Image (cartoon, rainbow, N blue to C red; front, side, top):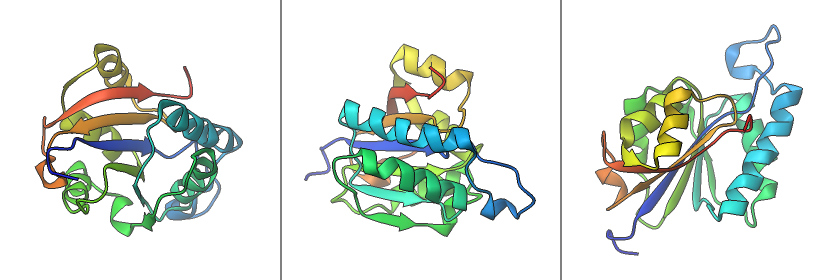
Length: 171
């Protein structure tokens, strides 16, 4: 793969979480979240958006989202449970993108709001008007934003990507 091959960044907010009396990092998915996560996986598979690499927060709700989503894909990509995704700022998420190996073409980040939404917004320099309108309206649980990036991963910076898809389980 050359650096001229476009890359895709898929940003996924974890599915709907429950609020039991546990530390934030340990919060599980709610029943709705356990239904939404596989739906997000089916949407990715139906669109042919298949990650080569997954960076997933270490929080229980993100790990469970990924574990429920992954079986819906035709193959399970390499997965890194990355502590830096939990409580990351948009700048920290972009820095992680900048460090991805050149061999990966499609990167899926399973993370948290507000960073996932803000990262999609910051990276987006243009794109599909309907997708941009969805992104502007919010980023509910289990929402996906798909961006394309020309060049290598180190070229990801504010305004450098094109928003091609925005999907939310709420229609």
